[in-house]
Length: 383
Ligand code: V47
Image 1 (spheres, protein in one colour):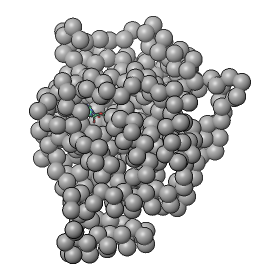
Image 2: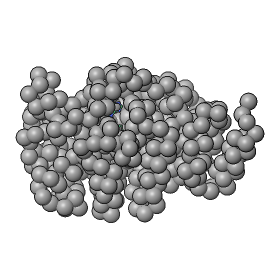
Image 3: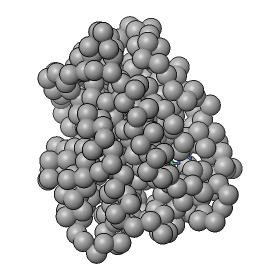
């Protein structure tokens, strides 16, 4: 039984959502209150999701590339990183990167998601060169690359301003920025999990500059570690504020903490119920970000399927070579075939639509799936 006072507050949130009004910090905290049944929040988030996207669920054909795992930082939540001299450490050479690009092309990928460590010895030109090499050889593949953590490192290496670096990377082939490095913005938590790396101010500066240059980006939130509901709502409100100013975010991806092999290994992985609540709360709070992604690699396939009825409209891509989650104990497959991806979406009653990174419809040549054309931008129906 929900207490009458909580029921009344939830009813007022429902009324606001139905009227298209914005939710505030107090509303967000209530949505995270376990007294409100998940199903009710899910239903409300689903109504917004269907208002915006109808019955469609998006996916793309993509691959990951992590050119090095060697990193100067030691974020407590990260199982992927390596010390410079550790046997685990690697740095890819040009041939390996070329082979990855070729594999992506041969598999009909429209996107490469490129992130990695901040290597002690590799210069800015090495990072830039990866984009230049791939975009010269495979110009049809969109390069979604480098987070504000890397861009901040490039700023340190080159002593050039963020805007100039972004413009230079775009010239080399950068298409958009992925959502990583956001973790939890609030310093009460950030200082405990990654106090050394790009702070919230730098993260927002990079995305703001990118948006002002016309470079689109994604955003994330890492939950299920040391943060509390207040820090999560604060995080969402900060993202919403930048989006009001620039409109450059495309997708929000809540990321569940995976504890294995990390400095926070004593913490339990969030439950599927917590995952679904985070997706639903995000859909309700982020009224100005068009897409909410249920990243199947991180959620598991079944939860990602359910998520398509809890606020999410996208389940990311076919994915290959994902390391960040698999190093931290994810047991999801390494990749999904396109047929399987479409089937998983259809099983939920949704209609699968292939998109590119910028949410334009992809039209495949039926005689050769590696050939495609880009259709129109997919409209958000009614936010
Ligand atoms: O920034 C690192 C997180 C992020 C762990 O833009 C961890 O489309 C859980 O940003 N457990 C990188 N999370 C992944 C990312 C992403 C993923 C999918 C799509 C997009 C997109 C972006 O992963 C990091 C960090 O927040 N992370 N280690 C871990 N042990």
